[in-house]
Amino acid sequence: MKQPKRKYKISLSQIVLMLIMFLFTLSIVIPMLNMLARSLSDPKVSGSMMGLEIIPKDLNFINYQVIASNPVIVPSLFNSIFITVVGTALNMLLTITAAYVMTRPKLLGKRVLMVFFIIMMLFDPGLVPEYFVVKDLGLMGSQWAVILSMAVNVYYLVIMMRYFEAVPTSLFEAATIDGAGHIRMLFSVAAPLCKPGIATLTMFYGVIRWNEYLRSGVYISSLSKSPLQVVLRKFVVDGDVTTLIGTQNLLNYNELAQIDYTALQYAVMIVAIIPILLIYPLVLKYYTKDIMAGGVKE
Image (cartoon, rainbow, N blue to C red; front, side):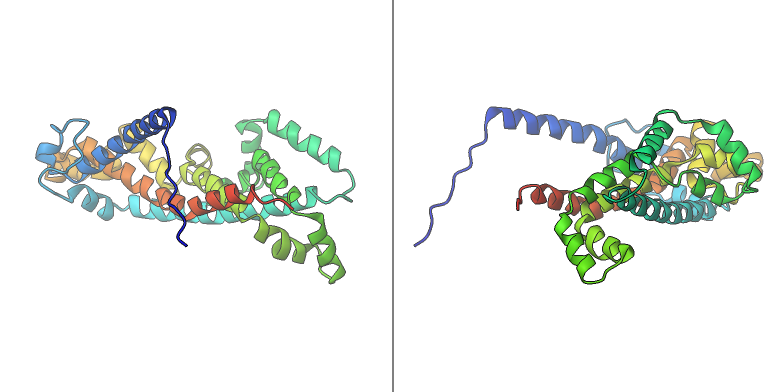
């Protein structure tokens, strides 16, 4: 016997909420589509495009050709990828291992360590002492100065601890009886059950690493080793046109010097935004799993 179909009623409050979320989404998507459209438009007409136009006029890829042929942009993109991938991997390794150790019931000095971490989180010593430490270690001018200087975020460590604390103690006891050590319990028992938290913190760390420009600008003096965000800041914020166009092109006032600089700025921003946007669909499924897991009780 077929069961009757359920009729879902949408209340007025839900309609208002969906409308607000739809308008909020439009306020984010339309400016990004406008940036993309203007960066793909012909430089002769891109300057006259309005803020709500999302369709390119006279499709032209000259802005992206300038970016691809620039001797600074492409290496800086790979530098950003290297710092993000290696830095995020180091972040997660230290955060996961530290969170596991801090959640062990027989850990000596657990409260002292936790108080120390919280004090370090609340009273950040700042960039100046960190600069002298990096200098004394001989890491100035190296990408490792940026990678190692942000190895652990205490707030994310506390979040990871909450996930590990939610793992049933009986699973650890069973693993101990089977002869598993702490490393085996961490990576075979605790970590697989905390995939939503690990995926979420990986995304958070990755976004921070990708958008980092302050420490890169302080510790890395060579433009060939700088990440994309430093180059982006020089061109977009400081207005350093020569970084992308080149001094000789500006002096000759050729075709490259006559392009729409604002559209070129948008193209650089699109190149900087797209890689990090690709991470969100990969992590989104773990949010749903985490919400469903909260409804299961022993």
